[in-house]
Amino acid sequence: MTLSRRVIVCLDVANDQVVKGVQFKGLRSIGDPAAMAVGYEQAGADEVVLLDITASAEARSTRWEMVHWTAEQLFIPLTFGGGVRSVGDVNRALRAGADKVAINSAAVARPGVISEAVTWFGSQCIVASIDAKRDGGARSGWRVIVHGGRTETSLDAVAWAAECVDRGAGEILLTSIDCDGGRTGYDLDLTRAVAAAVTVPVVASGGAGTVDHICAVLTEGGADAALVAGVLHDGIVSIESIKSAMAERGLPVRRERFWPASAVGVA
Image (cartoon, rainbow, N blue to C red; front, side):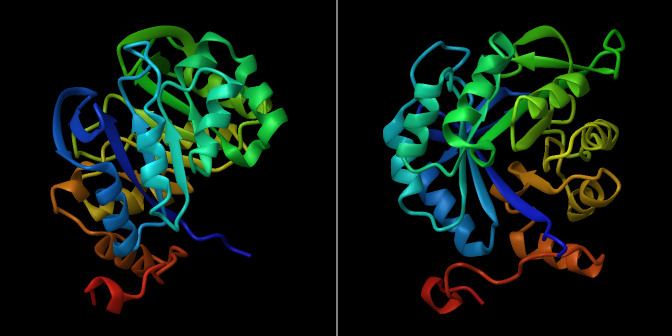
């Protein structure tokens, strides 16, 4: 059976508001996470990723009420990440209604947290979130960055992705910091390198500007899903236009909506 390629909407959140910037900087508030998540579900998104992008850098606890309020209004899968430091935090996220939990900075600091979380909750719940930046000093050419793009590490991004999968992570959420917010296309070389190194789905993030960019990362880049944010938020593309382009290129895609069109006023 051929699995559908997924279109996943990313909602970056700071102070309980969806924000958008470029390379994780210059953040601007654009809306309420729960309302935006429901709107994208109605428009045909396959999944939603909710990222509290300042929790780790600010060393604060996640606002679990926000996760709960968003999750209880969705029928499609919700992945939550940001400030997840322990198995206890994974448990809190799942109890709040998330279907999957992304671990980023905490896994770099203590890789065993991935294995522990997988032991308790299963690989299907655990996503290794990796922010990567081009660096000629890294073996593969990309280095892992943590704390919302603020702190460099010594980790090679491709090798780290493989280690996360060896520890049981069931999915890789891969963000190119170089391309994030630039709308010039995903880093196809990075995505291809990670997809070739792991045996789990890779979700590509950072750089979507057109439907062609999204189709390219799903074909040339080898990604299983494309994460999309700013171009959707600004109305430059729509979920429908993305999926139409995917179908035209022969990519398997889910076209039915979880919500009946008649119930939400869309055709």
